[in-house]
Length: 98
Figure 1 (cartoon, rainbow, N blue to C red):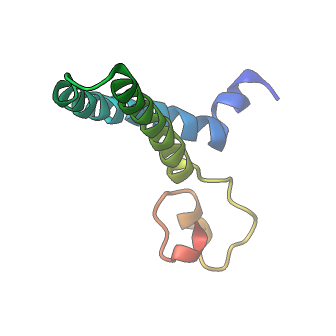
Figure 2: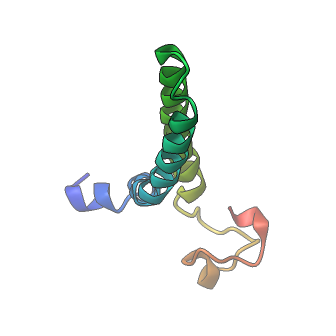
């Protein structure tokens, strides 16, 4: 497997899209965390640390979920639910294609 095949593999593309979407997803989580930490200012450091760990776990879970949703395995040969012209596109007339 050469480098071009590795970068165009479905798994690599899914990870790439997940990293791209992680930018805005993590920004939203960071904004919410900043607000929560502002509200927890008078609480213990352990409480603030737990909130930060929960936010970090949420960011990782969002990355995994986005990569899972973006992953499209290579099409097999002859799927009757999707005629060949549609097999090259993300759109397919049947949900059984995915």
